[in-house]
Image 1 (tube, rainbow, N blue to C red):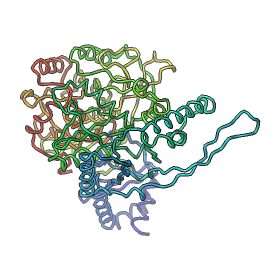
Image 2 (cartoon, rainbow, N blue to C red):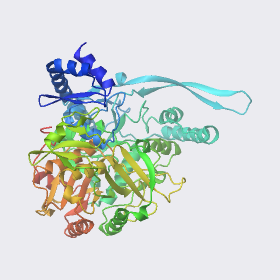
Image 3 (cartoon, one colour):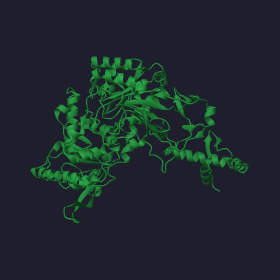
Image 4 (cartoon, helix red, strand yellow):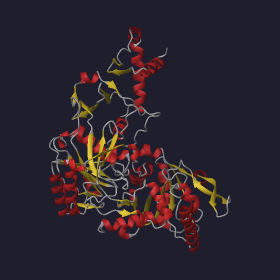
Length: 629
């Protein structure tokens, strides 16, 4: 019997073997190791160890043994072996680029904005230069034949019309288009298509949701200028190039005004990303609503650092199906009460502007229904989050010795060099703190946060505070007072909050030891000289992946971990920067956080928008968080 077959047979019996620094370790159910099997394992020990080393080496270069995979596995709430292994997070822009396929939509007849045309040509060349596959339009699209069928009043009679439209294929990650002004004929056709859609949805669709492709079938024939005909809108993003207005690039224009400009740009072009261009500079905006402005000389770094990550990681909300859902009583939680106190005090900072209602911004019902499907039923978009991390929960020893680590069993899908578990199922992680290997228990981490759509600075204790846990998986506890009429949605930033909570517990546990810690995110940055000696900042050179992704969670986890190489005992506040998005602050207590943020605002050192981000870039060295993984 080959070693591969032997190990497969043993695995099916629940017997796990692994290489521990040249020693063959075995974890087996009681009574499963027969004398015959023990003798065979002893005889073939050298062969088994050699096979395991080769397997481990291959896995390390693939995904099973990678550090990034382990972190993604943990913050993603993975618990059981799936039919296929979860995809490991990619945080290196060069690797992201190598997976991407984009296409350029043919220009409208008569389009003559030379600034946009020049930028479009440079963009295509530079995307190709970093490894992105730029696919010709004819190869990126296909003919899609379908029937539009409507019942009419005559019994047993239906009206059917066969139609064909050109759609972008599923394997295309982005369509690059230019903004175009509709003609009077376009507007007339669009109005007629909207009437057809409203009639269909009212008379024939009933309570049944129509898919995005289904809506496109009904209106796409008339709205090629407005919406893209895309096979899979969850995978293919629309990037629209347009002209940059001076006010959008002015650092002195208030961020609240830029929010309105950004939302209008996205809605009017029906795009996930808008790049606005002038001859010497350009900006990018997506639903993160950043106001990042770049010099045309920065185009190369922009491609890899900003655009590629946004194409690679679309903004997608975390569905409630990912959670184990339960109920809790927020009035009995002192952490929920602390969150309410934090929320109320932050109102005066003006760092959490009101979001926008999709119903008010997106006027057409067909367009609203498309957006509603893409945002998982959320009625609006808000900016920032407030959360409070509870002290971590341990069962048994919080740390163990290297000898005890050697006796633990492997965890499915994850390299035993990184993660193992004891007989109770408690997992232990090999960490490095100040250059020393430490074997720490992975605690259960919990935090309370505002539900999606709530007013972040005026939370209702009984209806707006959710409790989320990262235990053996993701858990969501909803307030008992919430009835079925209110559909609860967790924040887009759950992965980030969970990652920061877990990483803090592992690498800066003193910040959570007694009373937990406040955590906030706002769409702005502190100035570089705002920080005191007991405060730290990291993440400035990270790729600008959007919120709502576990890649962003991994980067925040790594940011906190990078500080573990320093002495973290005296750190009272940590700022984790998310380029093109904003900043996360975690502090030792609510009062300290509020004091420091208030001081920063009064001094002009903390503001919404990207005004202070350049000072952070100048002050912090460009480092890679993935180095040494």
